[in-house]
Amino acid sequence: MNNKKPFSSKEFRAIYSKVHRLCVDLVIKTPKGLVLTLRDIEPQKGKWHLPGGTVHYREKLADAIKRVARTELSSKVKIKEFLGYMEFPNEAKDRGFGSTVSLAFLCFSDGETLKPDEQSSEIRTFNKLPPNLIKEQSVFLRSVWRKIR
Image 1 (cartoon, helix red, strand yellow):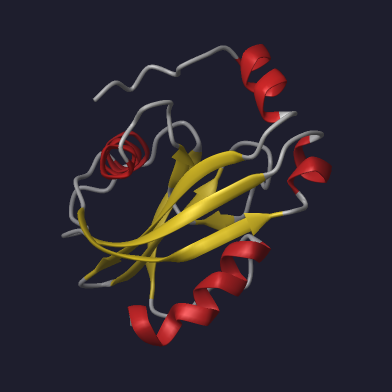
Image 2 (cartoon, rainbow, N blue to C red; image 1 turned 90 degrees about the vertical axis):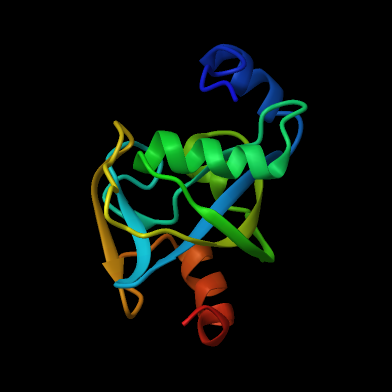
């Protein structure tokens, strides 16, 4: 599995100005609760969110999930099941371009070794959803809350 970004910021913008970006979001349960990270970069700086990221070309979904857990949390996860998808229609307004579709997967972690990367200032576990959560993720998590609790 490769952590290197597949293309430059300029290429990223050029590509995702024309097509949807496919991402994975990790709905991670630990013995203490649901894992969320506090964004330290734009867009959505200062909001809680699910760890997630772009699926690289020819990357298997399971490999993308493991890469995101490793790079954003310094952790390993066990993938339990696919929960559904989220669309981010306001991303063009937030970023100035683009539209993302993210596949959400329920994962498990021991939660003991979680460390944020440069994208987040903090990692916490929650037993109820915080008010300052990215809107689309909040709506999605509320729709599956009974299943993931």
